[in-house]
Image (cartoon, rainbow, N blue to C red):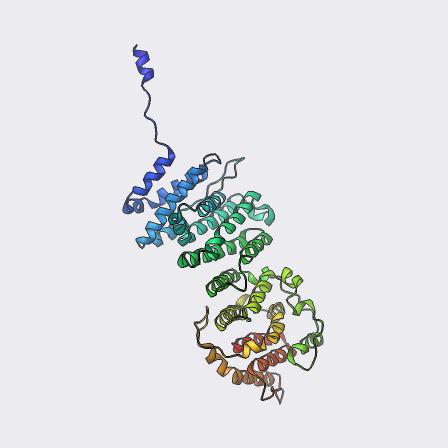
Length: 448
């Protein structure tokens, strides 16, 4: 009997993991903050330990993390979260035969949460504070490459196909919240838009760049020229963030500076005068399909700028402002000023701008009404336009003096400032010692 009683006494059952995770929602904020690093690391361990059969545990773990992150923001304690990502977080090292890395499980769980339409409150918080989850994913990817010495592997082999698929699904799950719900949740839509751009920019650093370009292409396919202004702004904000990659120039495979001065002048004549009819252009000077494949980001940006020039003044100004800032960044980058031919090769990369300017003289010469400034513009467009003609002639004179020439080729008096600027660009390239390619940037800025 005694033995029977002993065997009948059972240890108390532990509550299911779902119940424990649910109870964490009721914990007071100051208690969570006190043990924030430990709590978050434990939750990430639960997230990665969840098997495919217990997928609900991973989603519930993510919900608790979302709750904690939102509480930290509400209390003004965002810096604690940034410190956690920077100094505390360590990715899960998968055991042999397992691919449960933190970045892959997190991407899958975020996708599942965004697809759930029954809990918009949680998904909206995830969108608003998405920077935390995407920064965590990026650090996990970096540690995964470092710890496994995968950084020396060819880029296509660094990450498994399952993670590639997880990222593609993540992008597809995000896009409806940007393109469809942007009026309902404007702040959340802008937050997830910038966070996604930052994540893809990190993918260009860590992953197969062809795959990362594919993610950019998936994103761009959800937009059209008929989109409202707010969507166009978010599209260009995304492009600006991606194009700010520190290795933007190598990513675009700049062309070799191998053409003779005579060949370059002959190619530029059709863009500098209206006296010649259309001629066949070489690959280097047109936004052809082949050019955009070989120089993906530059080609994509210039195509979007070309579409924006056909729209209203605010959109035109926004697009041109982003391109202008990118050109200034190239001209002032110390890495590309040590040798003369470096700036020359960068200019060759942007030669389709000649065709773009020539085809849009009417839009560029129109003076729009006062509008809000695009990113990086410090003055009104009208102020810049009013000084463009004088400054263009000043630049032309400066170039002529620099070459020891006594006269400058001035445009006719009835030529608008855009045509004048195009002529100045042609003159700069005609006297194309590579040290003068920065004048192309300056002249393009004066147009706007």
